[in-house]
Length: 527
Ligand code: HEM
Image (cartoon, rainbow, N blue to C red; front, side, top):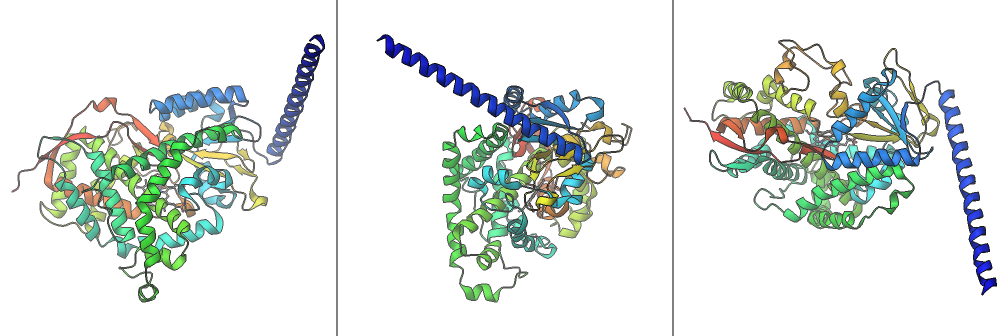
């Protein structure tokens, strides 16, 4: 009995000794990694960004605080709080890390964005980590890849957005007219955001896939729920990345369940792609108006997985961004009857009460364009962006982000994550002119400011920039403009039916009004 206790005590002691040894070795290894990285940072000629947390304890506290703010839909406030607490010499960039090898740099400095997206494009990419986290959902699509794979996806999608395809507005007309029939009679409340999400789904599928998903008539609630839900889960998994390598411990069960639902929804489109006869592909040229994205895909591959990845990516790109922006536009307009009047006056001047807008007419409607630009300034649909330094070109992977005059440049090491943050850049008051009669406070919705003001390059980036600029920009702007024109031809008053000031920003990859947009529309009297 005594000897067995002794034996147990001896094992526990040995275990403790080994445990301590492993801890000491691990700490020594981490310190060596940190020292090597610091030496490289100095050698590159730049500095570290200001560190807000640099060990597992402080980093965990930071992440928990971020998750808490995210659950309250207050991510923008969380970023503002951090940026505003930085010392003056490092006001617009900071870093956080869990372990020395997993540094994340957050920036709202336009010169950094310029380097990441254009000047030093090849040193940055989505990277293998981002790919690993996102690929169960978005596969090897345009959003998760770099280099040749990314280039292939871009070549597949780009022909779809040539001006002569977009300028044929028949699809917008078909789906937007149908959406308007779903708006209840004057004075009755509707969450217009729900209709916008269904309409943009139908426009995207009609335009890119050749057949509408018909979600205006049949809301496909299971798919819609899964699509929304997967984005929230994806966002959480991305935040959890800071804990790597322990991030894998997070539960993925519901995430995979959502993905399965989405895959079931797109299965018919995959089957249609695979069934396109080769004679049809030979007959249609890439620029033919009857050519759909499915034709381009069928020419490119017969692999159902590749087709799946590409389809989910364009659905995400085409549905959520545009619907969220329209929702924010109507949320803002509902608070400003004078701006609705001004916008409607422009609509009547250019197309009248019954006329049909053309592509050229939409392009010439300045107040309409400024309304959309202003909406995207205050509510960029893709509010946060994550790019990791690319492993594609190793020699260029360690690099320096040049700062504005007077601020130190920031060294970036291969494998670092760099987050640039359109929401925080657009929120930087020092980048705007002083408030005046022509220039309202930057926090206020004011399409009028655009008559006398133009943001400097890289200070306004709702559609990204450089080689990865959004290929759907012109399509989205035309779709949204068409929608607003059609709605304001019919309605002359929008009334908000909720607590306008209680609205929050739900950022699940895409930023959308957390409380929906409950409004009542009032039909204009026809002359
Ligand atoms: C208001 C509407 C839209 C906004 C604000 C917007 C914004 C953006 C942004 C910020 C990116 C860069 C994202 C990243 O780096 O991961 C992007 C990429 C992309 N967008 Fe859009 N987008 C909009 C509408 C659309 C539409 C309607 C489509 C297509 C139907 C589309 C297709 C794409 C694609 C394919 C990419 C990936 C480009 C690449 O990585 O090369 N977007 N968009």
